[in-house]
Image (cartoon, rainbow, N blue to C red):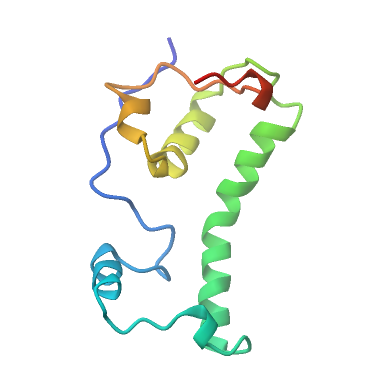
Length: 120
């Protein structure tokens, strides 16, 4: 048994500090002053800095996810190590729209499964 308890999220965490907080997102959705990316100059240094920060923040988890899915590290049907399972749970699964249903009262394990093996 490899599982560990997972607490339900207290709202979604931000990927990085350059993204909007839930309060800012709500304010902007209700008519606040938010600058859309199409309104900004592509060469705007502030915009470029924010974009670079987002990439730096998410790049490690994207690399880990790709490594898990596409490297020979795991074979189809193999369970993730506890370390990889925790990283995926804390950094990826928390953003799944059915997070609470997926987690339930805790995880038993996360398994690598090819796209053709997926079932509803």
